[in-house]
Length: 207
Image 1 (cartoon, rainbow, N blue to C red):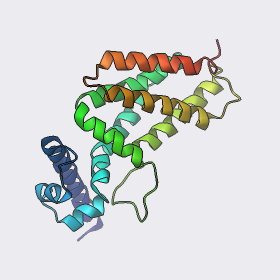
Image 2 (image 1 turned 90 degrees about the vertical axis):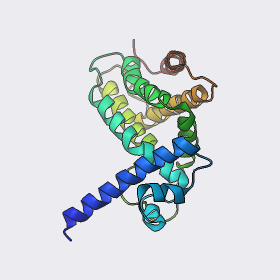
Image 3 (image 1 turned 180 degrees about the vertical axis):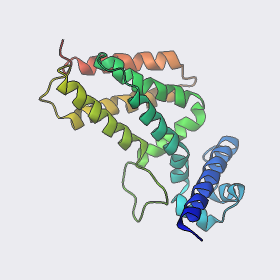
């Protein structure tokens, strides 16, 4: 078997596992879903499933990881150059609210479980795993902060990584509070995010 064929087979198995996990989570709910049922739906052995995801939490993370990675890359690639920093931030963060609003019930579990995933797991990473979505988002935010500092739109003396972490913390806090509502309203959630970011940026933005 060639290396290329093996990689294609791994990619196809991963895709089947992601599709099966999303379907079972939606049908049964996260708490009632089992890894064995997901493996059966994906037509792989339980051992094969655990080669791609260490546990049920990691399965849920895997369902969203690739999509959020692609969403982050796409939105940062189209950041409006020269726009106010707040406008740029909302350009990359609003689509995430839209994404989570598609399935709030499952999104609540995803946000809760991916928060636990910030703590490093023991052992090797599952096959094909990317960096957690929040880590990738923080790295892109840090780069955006640096670009705005170089352009003179943000104070240069602040550490870009720290600024990015503060912005990410605000987004995560607001996003979780919004999803915790019985009926999360997209416009209201984005409005509160904007207000929180405006407050935080008063000390950073250069008029």
